[in-house]
Image 1 (cartoon, rainbow, N blue to C red):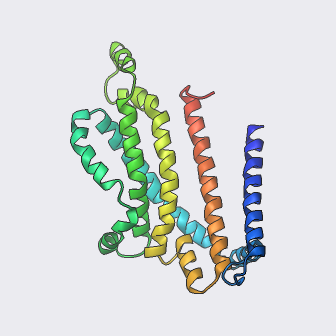
Image 2 (cartoon, one colour):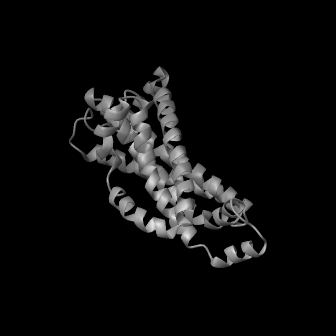
Image 3 (cartoon, one colour):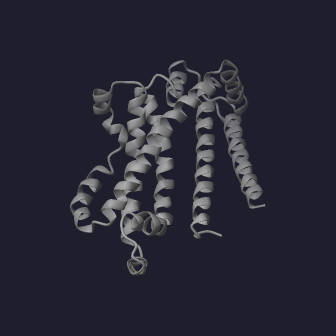
Length: 253
């Protein structure tokens, strides 16, 4: 029942957004070539789908996103579990992380292209950087905030490394780690598009640039709409995965 209510909320919200779009189109004085209506954007979406361009660019973007995001989450969680158990070492590492964290991943693009060239790798590296810091810092914080009682009980039962990390520390810290993973998802998806707009010749970000260069505002807005829908789907899938993991570990009803 809750799933249907959530789906209804999403549909209603998107419908309201499209209605606002239509109203703005109706009252504006801009040419439809510069500011198309929802109907024109939908027609462009159908056109791209029929030509196969849309699904090919979606597939390309999703492969890049999966490669960058999953690798970043795995490495950040492993490193966070390690640094979380070594607070004295983290005191020296943290200032460097705080220095690098606010820098936009796209600011590194000239160096990334210099090192890796153009193509898939620059976009993957940007996704990796975008997801890395939120997950790493949330993992370190989660591990440092674990109730010492868990560790004392584990010690009494003779649980040692590596079982202590995977059977006690990680499950106890996972709810907070999941928040960082969730935050990193949106950030990484945003910067995937930004990375493809700069250093790629395919994908949804490249499709936006190509539409702009060809003065196809209908294609541009249709692509933006698709990017938003995929973001909603990714968010929902991640929430479902988090709930199942928490339920399996006794952390969710």
